[in-house]
Amino acid sequence: IKITDKIKALPKEAAYFSLEFFPPKTPAGLQNLHARLERMSKGLRPLFVNVTWGAGGSTASKTLELAHICLTVGLTTVLHLTCTNMSRAVLDDALDNAKLMGIRSILALRGDEPRQREYFGHQQQGVEGGSSNEFTHAVDLVRYIRQRHGDFFAIGVAAYPEGYTESAYPVEQSPALDLPYLREKTAAGADFIMTQFFYDVGAYLAFEKLLRDDPSGVFKTIPIIPGLMPIQSHQIFRRTTKLCSVKVPSEISDAIDAVKADDEAVKELGIRIVTDMIERIKATRETAGGLARGFHFYTLNLEKAVAFIVERCGLIPELPTTSFAAIAPIDEIAVM
Ligand code: FAD
Image 1 (cartoon, protein in one colour):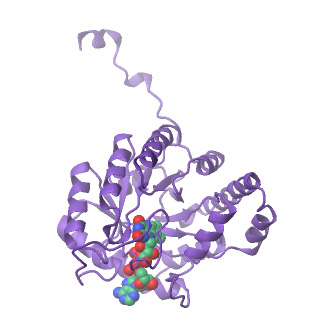
Image 2: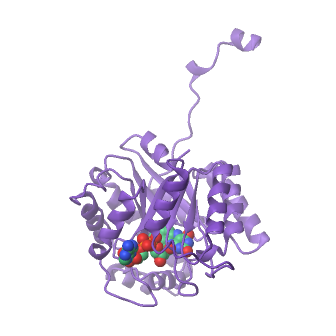
């Protein structure tokens, strides 16, 4: 099932969440993650999960293997794909395999230059066979998927509430500079938008408003899913925000620094910070494009912080209750 259909089927007043995972490097790591996914599938019930892709196709088989595991534990799965510095055969293979596995949603990305930046869990590298010049930006991948696979996949694209920056070549960062390209990606056939993580809720809400009010109208009703990174440790927090040029409001920065020597205190404060962010965003349902509000978590493959956050924010959906009226009378069951 496409994630966009799942979102549409939710009541408008509902809130939902998704979780992102990267393929572990070792079989033992994969085994641990498998068990964690089983627990999270049953206990947290995310609307869907995302599986990341190493730029250049560096994790192609591991990504597909993890996606398969997600599906087998009953999780609706979004496959990430990047398009630059990679042979077309790797891309075609991934899309064909996704289709065979029953994946109906893709996050179409550009990917970074090799070795320029590490996308969380994986070091990036190009693959033999080189890249075709066909793909320069994510929009090229959106068009390619639509051209080859029509409407089979729901396609998502990335957006940056504080503006995009290449960490290796910092330039002026502003969402307005990226807007024409985000418009182009959306008009080319994107069905949902997932954002870079942030800690400045004001900046996120201003970004969402910028999109909803855009005169082109392409962002009016598209799901825009804010990205959130639970704070796992002081070191990871500082490293990931620096790597992605994510601004940290001074009140959050000061509060985290004040407890940095105490890992448990950092975790607990981190849970409170992200919980507060969600509550503030949840209160703005009217800007959710008329749909249920979603939240996407960059889990870094960890379970605890995100479990506390979704629990405290009331994001875990109720288990479907069996309706007694729907159960056939005993005499009917007897003849079945
Ligand atoms: P694009 O949309 O191509 O944009 C990149 C930059 O180019 C922007 O500044 C944009 O304004 C500009 N631009 C776009 N089109 C044009 C144009 N026609 N002319 C001139 N400039 C243009 N990376 C991975 O390697 N694996 C992953 O699994 C992964 N998952 C991600 C998930 C999310 C939600 C996000 C936000 C990022 C993810 N990334 C991942 C990182 C992403 O691949 C990199 O940040 C990449 O450098 C940019 O990808 P993009 O799809 O945003 O690129």
